[in-house]
Image 1 (spheres, one colour):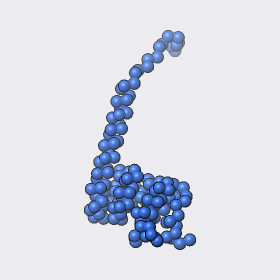
Image 2 (tube, helix red, strand yellow; image 1 turned 30 degrees about the horizontal axis):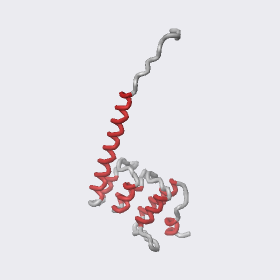
Image 3 (cartoon, helix red, strand yellow; image 1 turned 90 degrees about the horizontal axis):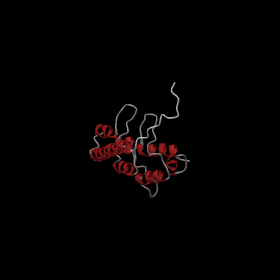
Image 4 (cartoon, helix red, strand yellow; image 1 turned 135 degrees about the vertical axis):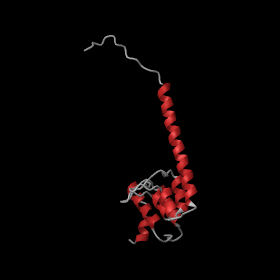
Length: 149
């Protein structure tokens, strides 16, 4: 089985599919095979259950690789499927850092918007959880019937 046919295979564990997704994104060429484009092949892996937060040996997720390799359509695809714009690689670099370093101007505002939206959601969730704690009635235990030591 050749390298391109491996990319067309959508069977395997979510981690295996995630690593295959990273491999596709890292390819230097468009990687098109037959009638499918690179974004189509990435979509097929994601829809087959690829873990979009899988990390390779450098701690890079598919989104980090896409931001580093001028893959704006794939960035959007990954973000649409819930990829974290807050992820950082083993060196501490974010997707925005990679896009800035590679001068991928179209990716930067897309990543900034996704990062901001994800941060806002984290803050909202945190606030809802804090409010829920205060809304719960306090249950005081009665000391009756308990012996003190």
